[in-house]
Image (tube, rainbow, N blue to C red; front, side):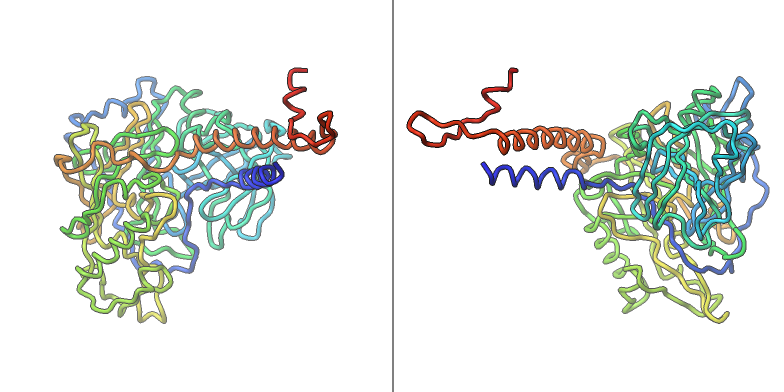
Length: 503
């Protein structure tokens, strides 16, 4: 009995310490903007009306998508952010756009890495919910107070919106040197909201209060651009309420959203160059596969990452390339002006199409995953590897998303991809999309048998905690009450709970 109690106490302790992390990884470092984007005036695609863009129209006239173009600043290294005005009178802050979390959170106390923060005491409309909230990401964490306030979006839907705000009071590893944002805009579903799904996420509030369609789309224009410590050479667009056809070329291809928590999709296979990795498709979806703008790199499950690196080393024209480059511990440098991209192959991700028997392929060129980060003495250009191993699933992060205009169609539960108009280098596109392909030879469900989803795990955790509480009560009763004896005086193992549980 005592051994059983010890085991249950151990289980309770483990349960209370369980942590579920949201993928967010921003690369911190010093950069040099030696490459500039060609942001030429964008033109309307003539065949836009033929691609099912009904959601882009706004009969109420409350949204002008053209006004939202270039409403993002930043780059993949330090994140893409947009300007928000919070409170009454308004306080202007920059917030990181993150499709991999669901809380709207802003700094509410001074921090060495941020220039200013949201002062709740100065807002006449701020209301505290008298609840604490905490979020842990793959990198960094914060704690604070849950409340609500009015916000306006200078380059977004018109009007004032009341939203839930997490006021960040304490953080560790979340705000980083040389960033220019003071909060985070979680655009995922309520199931990821903290402290629980009853906290309505930002975009849900925007849709409910403004009546815009439950669709947003994202263009991130940092492809092939090294970040600068003094200015933001890149930027992008967050279109709330639909799709802006001038931000992409060609057709849009859609893949279903499997579950409404993260934007979870189904990856069927990967190719390096023309070489199929020939892995079981369940390997690609181990744990989950998601589309996450808040994660800097393309993150792959361990076995998939190793297979990709091996294939790159086999097909690369560089012999004896340093393993430290692929492991993220070393930069690769070339004489300034010499491009390393010709030495590396394309990488393709096959996603299941809305027609389950078909797939389509999104392809990134080396300019997207061999990323310029700095120069040395003005003589060398240095690059990092934009792919990393992951312990919690496959993450299609900024490394891939910078090549595409990505549409989060929450009405029809699908994510769309089209080649971005700003993903070009010397007028050559850095991304490609093709299809349809028959999904032959691929399992009908590549996600079967993967590990438990986070919401279900939370249910299990809470259930175990309830059981643990009950067991603790039982143990206390056993310790306090005397053991019952038979007439012969021997101690019995009869439980007091059995005798008294109906009282």
